[in-house]
Length: 317
Ligand SMILES: NC(=O)c1ccc[n+]([C@@H]2O[C@H](COP(=O)([O-])OP(=O)(O)OC[C@H]3O[C@@H](n4cnc5c(N)ncnc54)[C@H](O)[C@@H]3O)[C@@H](O)[C@H]2O)c1
Image (cartoon, rainbow, N blue to C red; front, side, top):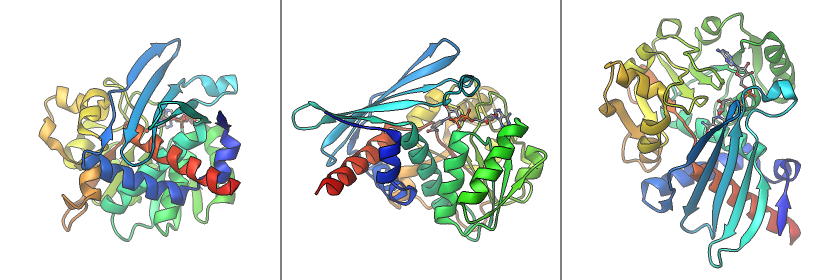
């Protein structure tokens, strides 16, 4: 059986490839060509372990990802979000491969931010902000530079040391000026695109800190009682989610304002797949704030796993 590790996968799948594959997967989701049973989330120790199965018609494989989120792991010298994907052959059900998926998870999560931003961010976006300078934050920044000609990227993290490391590392890797912000408010003040990629349980940005026109991609929280966005921001924005069902189960960013009575379910304007298929327009004239809330879907994992296997076979030929 084939086993591919993070370093193999880094060579096989680029962000650019992942963006196209993830966009296509969201189109298939909106067309009803996907089986994606509800993921399980177990609270274990000081973290969570999730199992995420999926079958996308036409890919020839089914995948199940096991992914953990252990916010204290960096102190242990381990990643916060380690993952593996088991790949089954769709015809025989045999396990065909096992892929280490820490890189793939961050890649596909960056990719979905890029896809959503293509539909929702102000067209001439030049300034971005990343709040949360951990592993996902790096891939979020990378993904944005693939689809926008950014001039400036503001970065902020509650850990000064992680912020410094991010600015140093990403400054060398990306063709954009990266600035260290003193506060989240400073980071987002002039931003056209804002990404929140933290392990915070409480809002990390406030409506009053953000300009009139901006797009926010909130990828960090996936628990009904955790959130990165405040109620005012969510209430004012045109809100797009990866999956209505998953968001209404897991996204505290939406569920907390609902519990407060500030918004109802109808406040969700669309699923990303509806924008991809052109069933609903993304940003239109007059839109100020837009939000893409991602809790993370198994289709994203299937899409990048399928691509990785295809590239692996090509590399063998
Ligand atoms: N939506 C998705 O598909 C998806 C995919 C992968 C991970 N995630 C989630 O993204 C989050 C980040 O994951 P990671 O692997 O990058 O973790 P990480 O530990 O590497 O990075 C998280 C960073 O957030 C910072 N942070 C925490 N609270 C903050 C605050 N209040 N203000 C500013 N910064 C703050 C931490 O200091 C840390 O640097 C996790 O909650 C994870 O579950 C979501």
